[in-house]
Length: 245
Image (tube, rainbow, N blue to C red; front, side, top):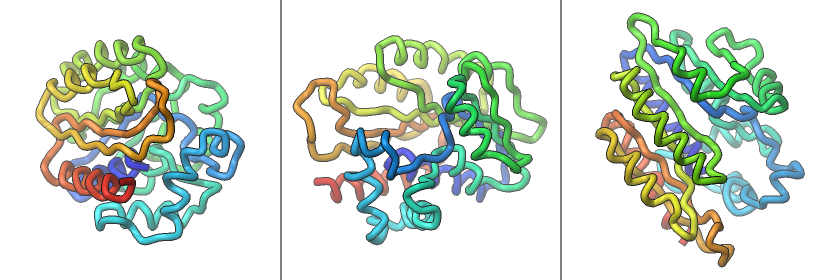
């Protein structure tokens, strides 16, 4: 929820600018999610996060448009990041989504069907992304939401980011970061945040598990982001922190 609300606000800000954007995701997943389905019920994340929000007002103005959009789609078609980008960006903006998992790629294609601004690519996002280059007059916005199941996942992102930032010196980067009980992500997050100017916003929720590997929060790191992009992210983090405590 935090991740998608912040992404929504950043993309809204981008769409109000004079820039034309090439928006890209390295790990796009399916595009939409059924919060009433087996997987959602198994993890129970939606039960304690998004689902209760559907019956209340937004906890802060920065979340209002995102929550209205989520409510308009219903719990069986919760919008992931590709669908959020479709909604927020304009006719002159382009979107490229990488997803290598075959089943998720097929669902992503279906979610994006009929939108000429978008392109789904069945490929490794890190390798495929570096073949892209913005057109004349375009600026890139890159969203990174990889798996963090192993330390190698963090290492892969830590190695890729400097290469990408050198290739696209004007690009804006958003990196989602899960916050674990044992703080395994701390050193990695500090490294990413040090790569350039921007923002770090995050929130932790009430503990549901005593396992060191338990997920107990969420953060977003913005690199080469403007203050208008950062302010809503801070407001969303503060509002959710108060709500969950």
